[in-house]
Image (cartoon, rainbow, N blue to C red):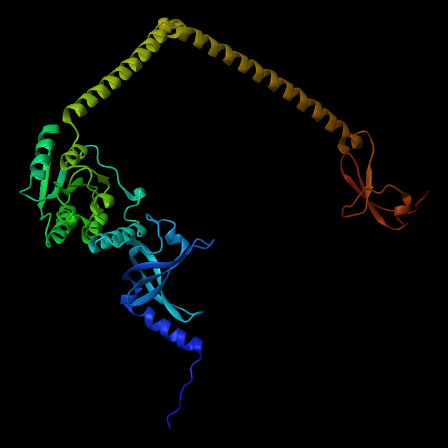
Length: 402
């Protein structure tokens, strides 16, 4: 008989957990049912069941998810919940870990949009710190919209009125229908690759939620996020808010308002430049006045008013310094000469030759050496040298006395 493998409860539960975690459909599932057995303990987690006439599903919604609920839950309320199905090992039952929950009347398209919005927000696509400022004076403005829509005409009219001669570059794209998201994303990419476009406006006129759905797609949102050029989104009317509006660097309530954001008024810029030029001119004139006053003070100074006389004064001062330097040098030379004569006299007085000249002699051993100062330093019969003032005697000692 084949060997039977007996599993522990925990082993079987772990095996089922792996099966369920590897099932992609169970990782993100939508379930519709009626709430029952709703409990909300002190932990802040929500525990309840979803049931229909044929089955019941245990559910848990952790505090981090339940804190942001926009609706109040109660028993008997029919809802649609999104979450992950997994096994709770302690009880050995499967349950739905709820991430979001909506009233049952919410359409699937709305639920999908809410899920996409939450995911993109978690990824940071809507973060305000990544939004770039718009250029003050764009050289070229890119337009991504339908070539036949009223939005294009409005943007062209307003741009030309605000800054005559500004260059507008159109990247035509469908703004509704199945092909619209891909065309909008491609148009953004083409404008960014073209180069020279400093800001891009993407948008269309108003319409129903279905008409604006292309701007609520992940493809368009990520294309705006990846665009290296600042993007202004102008989709629909002021009350409409799409994913494109939330990802873009700036959101305009209408295409006309987007053109006003992107294109400055030429007359206002000229007026501002003129004002700056006047301020610069006044500053320069003030600096010139200060320099002129300083120059006038210098020209009235004694050095520039009487230059020849000032030169004479300086020359006389230099002559005086030269005379003082020569006198000091001569005085120091005399003092040094007198000092040398005094040293020579002292050396002469202390010289052994002077002593010898007075009749004294120096006695030492032959071949040099120190002078002999005592008779005890020699023995009879030894030879010594006697140095006189003039000449030298070679002598032999006959007797040495104390």
